[in-house]
Image 1 (cartoon, one colour):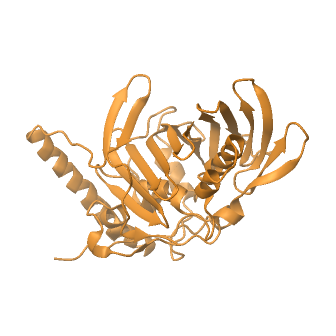
Image 2: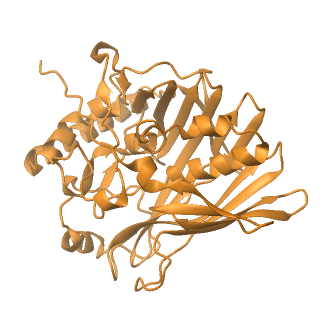
Image 3: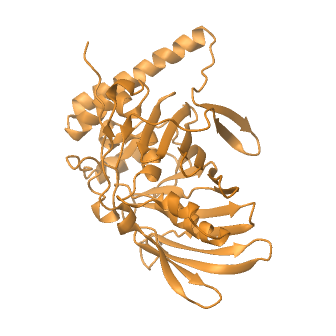
Length: 383
């Protein structure tokens, strides 16, 4: 019996390097014509959650890996979460949370998207003391649960992610439902925030962007940050390309404390509302340059549900530009899932996530609570 391959690929680095989105051997093809043909019969406003992409439109990694990379992949020596924890005041910590939130806004290559995760798929990686675990807790709709912990720093991140992609005429916009909670247990503070929407634009100028409003709120301190990811004009004119603007204020007094301005793919500054002093709080080149590909430290303890294992054959075929093999590999994974689903239905079994307790409500949508207090060390690590 052939052993399955574990294929791990390089995270996205900076915008200037977005044409290379794997380990350096894979380069996203120029497929604008194919993209336009793919969507020519799709109606405006259509929900594309069940839309299946041919392998040529996939990058060699799962969406769970992409979610994980947004948190654990930073430049060597950079620890944004530790910086938050070391803030001397609540305001210092909120400013660091703003910088960390912007750092999770990552570039992506035009024309390709990660694989839709299968039910029960996981991605488990460690970086230093930070352990990250993502699990696909629903397939229709696509819902991913995220848990990251640093036991040494007493930090925890929880997210239940529910993207809904819709065709908007000039492209596809994924509405990113779900709240992210960042807990600093040493300070008794929880920062709750939403995510910007992901815009895949192919007319009139092809491109990728993040758009929409993000609110970061700490209920314990009353401090709030509001960030706006600005949309470009239809023809791309003006200075709003990847622009981010916002403010930090005290919700108890409504006093504006700082003004946020810049570009999420370069630098973001903070202007003190009291004395107009300006300083840089985020530098994308510094944070996202020279990212390392995760590697398998303990192959025997890699879970069979690990993204890099589940999609290993497909990822390798995409990197090798072997599209016939890629189609076969993708079909095999998807058909296996259909068989398992039919078996569960015939036995009237309800699938239960392994690492999260999942609930739904009309007010909050999907909610995911980790079963374990601390994410265990992973057999896959990154520097």
